[in-house]
Length: 313
Image (cartoon, rainbow, N blue to C red; front, side):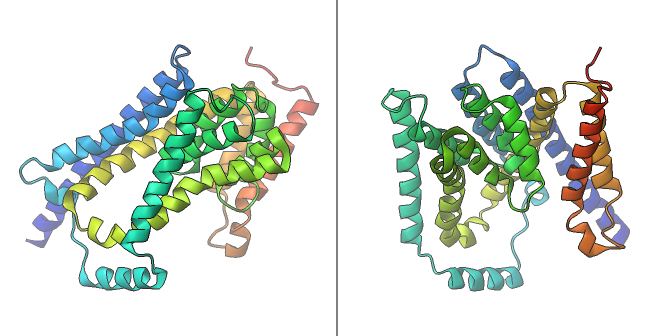
């Protein structure tokens, strides 16, 4: 009986995983096609990201509605988890009224800046345009810092705010430093408009996430017990993975311009992934990624200095 129960559970997990893999793959393909089509405007491409996330959520939600499928997606939280979450929310001390107010503030800022820029009141350059672009991206991105990279590349390079070389140099610098990838916005803002631009870009990209996290905390206890929401979230997470994969492909196409670049990419990736001494030297492992980026930079510089494999011919 135990064997049958284990096999049944494994079959359910495999079933859900196949759906998630399908959603991630389809999201990757559609994202690459949409972002690669020059006739589609930047704003429409930006709208495609949240649309794909919603579609992924709808698919898993619809699948969960079929007979006997709900248990594949939803497991009610146990008493221990409930007690721990209640303790956390009590320490935070944000009331539902404050949460609603924060959502209203977020919607107001998003609607105002997007509307003003769309109407031409906010121009295509300057601090207001920079804040609008960052706040809009911070509001619709789901899945982590890597997902925002293609949108950042389009918003700041295609508009002429920074050059493509400056973008990738800054990306490499941020990857070698501690902290979240969203700190990249400060670098881009500083390159474009100095110290003021750094603070405006940082606030614009970080602001929506911070506001929404604080806004939804008072409601999380109830929301996490809603079966349809958990089923919807499963598809959103799968689609977000697809966006991350698409971001990797887009960055490769934009950053790798020669066999030397490709070799540097694989050298650095292999060093970080396969030679990390996390078991033998845990303290050194903390700095392994910056070390790998530094060594990769030296390796790439050496190839450039030697003028070796500097094209794809």
